[in-house]
Image 1 (cartoon, rainbow, N blue to C red):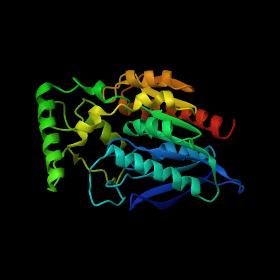
Image 2: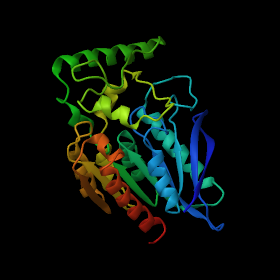
Image 3: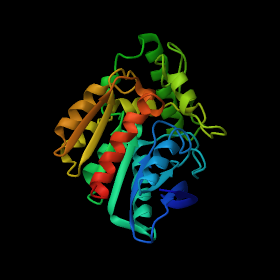
Amino acid sequence: MAFTTEQVSFQSGGDECAGTLFRPESSGSTVPVVVMAHGFTATRTDGLPPFAERFAEAGLAVLTFDYRGFGESGGSERQVLSIERELEDVAAAISFARSLDGVDPSRLALWGTSLGGGLTFETAANNRAIACAVAQVPFADGPSLLGKVPPQAAARLTAKGLADIAARKSGKERVMVPVHGEPGSLAAMTSPDAEPGFDSIRSEGSLHRNEVAAAVTLEILKWRPGRKAEKIRCPLLVQVATADVDTPPGPAVKAAAAAPQGRLEAYDCGHFGVYSPPFFEKVIADQVEFLTGNLLGG
């Protein structure tokens, strides 16, 4: 099915979030909609369009967006990631999508990848407007990351995080660290596949910046969104990468089992493998089958 794209915007917390709306060309009847929540510091043009295009071709409207402070969205604090703020942005995106002409507000799916998968767990547990949800290579449990970073690098990152918290409290300029770097370097993500992984999803002309306020590295370690899965009443598809060292799959597997209507699919690749061939085709096929089955009834 052919589709169109349109640049849109919506309000969240007094700021404007930039989005892209994919619409299938239909006979005029209302269609379901998928709201897509990206991962750690990424923007809506990085890795999401191939998924959105397949969903639109299957007859679903799709909304992608940038979180406040990132990409083309507003917000005076740039590159400052707050889980609470991103949860607010997801909620605002859902409300906006449900208000669109030609969209059936009762048939809305939430799709989240990586950190966005954690946002999906938490949002789907609390928002009954969600008809079904997809959590792709989701971040499910902060404490599971402890011990994954060499002690010396972890100590340096912790010091930066504490300095950033102090700067925030005193109104000073935020302390930034790279989003990704080589193993052993000072960065939020330093697994062997972090740097090439970000390079693989970054679009031409991407507005993604390799920096983030350091305090989020401490906030994430305390966040356990996978534990909300038992409260998710809608159908939930959890997709894990068995060789994922960036968001270890174990907690996500438990989340899928805890969800009353959870379904687990596993792929023999690393965290970023789901975005590219050869694994992308299987991942997207499972998602299209799940979404159309729950939103279109076929």
